[in-house]
Amino acid sequence: MNREQEITFTDGDSYEKWMGVWSQLIGNQFLDWLSPQSGKTWVDIGCGNGTFTEQIYNAHSPKEIQGIDPSPEQIDFALKRVADPSVAFQLGDAMDLPFDSDRFDYATMALVLFFVPDPAVGVAEMIRVTKPGGSISAYVWDVLEGGAPMVNILDQFRVLEIDHPYPPSSEVSRMERLEETWLEAGLENIETKRISVQRTYENFADYWNLTSRSANVSPILSQLSSDMSERVKKMTQDSLGVDHNESVTVDAFANAVKGTV
Image 1 (cartoon, rainbow, N blue to C red):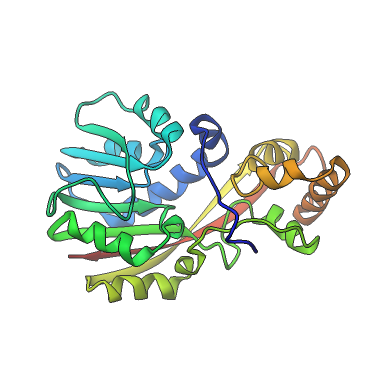
Image 2 (image 1 turned 90 degrees about the vertical axis):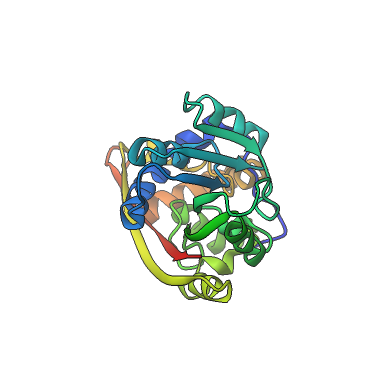
């Protein structure tokens, strides 16, 4: 495990292909659990290419959504996603939000909190920009307990002792640490939930071609020799127990938390 290497997201289109479906699957369950009111104001922090922002927009008729992300490429993709003046995207830092205090009804981070260098500061910023009584929420792949969608490939990296990056604040993906972060921030009515999702690929080639694009897999594979890369691929297929023609079903899970200001 390597937290020194940085995981970066510099291609909104590629992200959509390998993570977009996963994001929508888990985002739908998260929003059902959050049960937000319609006609409210939202900030989607670490909005990426706008997948979750679009889900909020389509399902809950918000009055306003502000999406921020540090990646220009992701923001460029997001800007093409929703054509409505009530939805805006801009570059921004989760630990220094470019918004006035007490502005939003809902502040959320979708698959983001473990990328924030200091999660406590990120949560404090969420609270600052949210109205009293507003909702603060997040969900993250449980990367330390095998919940990430690309875990089958990461497992082979570990077996072969191939160094690979993890999010810098991976510990916050543990359910107990996630809940502690909300408690330490002074939030009320705190609830947590494990969200499980499943995705089926047409065959192993489909699974590999998409999943190997993951931001913590693709850069590592590109550094390996062709023989070693093929070895990782073969070991991954063996771990899934499928031939070249069988469909591949992968399970993933995330931990979610919500509370009120």
